[in-house]
Image 1 (cartoon, one colour):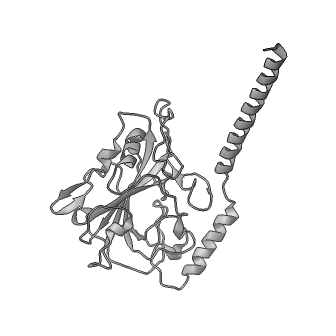
Image 2: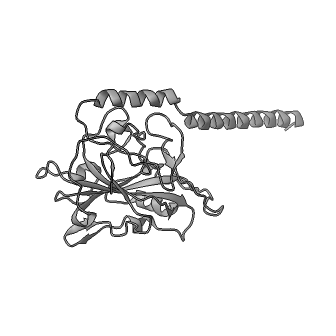
Length: 292
């Protein structure tokens, strides 16, 4: 092959490589774009319009460092989790709640729950931040990576139910209005085999006739309790009608990211990805005072 031909092929190869690289960078930039503040403000306005004077109870998520709220729709505080059945475990990418060790705002995101919420304020070591090559919990095309913050929800119900997929597992035909409690624990993912194992955190066993997650941390600060609702971005512009007693820990647990991937590959809840985040509820009319 002549030298000139080799040079032309090299130039073409380089041009293709540059084009592919540019396309990848453009895709990353597009995915990283956030909606404007005005977009989120419009969602908040829609939530106000769709709830004002219509009798909805207090909503979630909220700033757990702030004790304010004027919502008067009172309902009974759910019993301690030891007297309820664990019915579901799932997690959200970034913390839905704000407070404690997770007050770093991730940005407005896409307006549909992606790339928003709150991140761990602290720092992991360089070794813990080493990227993983495997696709962790990527069923929806958004793999988790070292350094990511998650808010894990351990959902409990007073109904005679057992652990299963979705919040539907927490309801029963025989109990139309069960008491619901969510134990919230924020975690940060580390590439560290010595960190907490998610399988241990999400272990299930029966204790005194109730399904339990016995390893929900008890050393992550005093949980903040309040009356609220279910969460998720589908409620950015409307209220959730379900009444939930919340218990959210202010400190963040460090968890091995690889163990989270293993759990996503095999769990009774059919959870294989991180869920989106609902906008933080700030309207006092949609918040309750904290439970003292």
